[in-house]
Length: 319
Ligand SMILES: Nc1ncnc2c1ncn2[C@@H]1O[C@H](COP(=O)(O)OP(=O)(O)OP(=O)(O)O)[C@@H](O)[C@H]1O
Ligand SMILES: [Mg+2]
Image (cartoon, rainbow, N blue to C red; front, side):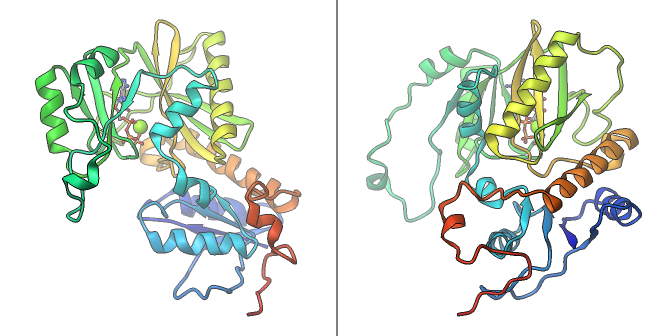
């Protein structure tokens, strides 16, 4: 039985994960996937695939969806990942009792060339910028409704800055969010439905450069327990197996800032040895549960019940 990894240019996590699995006694082996032209009815040799990169490579995403049909379990579920976005996530978790910053979705500033004024008759114009700013307050954060890597994230201090960055945003759909003036900030790995690692995090450091640090007693026990509960609820509701959630803590309340990260940073240079070891072990244990348990993450999708016979790893479909 095999676990396959689909990776981008990241180093350390994939290699160390493979080494850990192959030198332990899990009952399966791990390796890098190699894939070329994919036939629609190809079987898939992997019981489990750990996907770290399909958000950047549409070919991989399409391959993974077909691999799911062939019976592979994909971590994370490519169907949900394709459908998900930060604004939906924010609206969802607010309804689960998780604290969120006040958040407004904004119509795009620009559109692809074939969209003209007539195409946009449903859009309110002019926008009620005063009302929007009154709701979020200042400062505020403008960021893509579906982004990552700190790209196009702006702190806004005035109406002028708001309009300036909005006018620069082009075709990217943005949201505006209350800035949480935090006294502490944490980033948390959540693996499956039971493992949470809360890591103190300093977002004032440059991206991927020493933001994680160790601090005993960083959170009082009640706050710690609330964040663990929130993280588990997030993974449960969003259907993720590997995820990170960030919380900005203000007046003892953890506000969920960024919690749809299905391929979170796992580089040892960034997260550190100890956190990475924790992650590797938890992901390997999760693979073990999925490999030997009776689990189909796709049961709630209608097509899963329409496949006859049910998909099994290695089974080809006759056409
Ligand atoms: N509402 C907010 N209040 C305070 N700080 C915020 C807020 N939103 C974003 N930030 C700051 O901006 C940083 C980047 O924002 P965010 O994490 O949402 O973007 P991202 O592009 O998804 O980043 P990542 O690469 O971590 O996925 C956060 O780490 C945080 O420091
Ligand atoms: Mg983030």
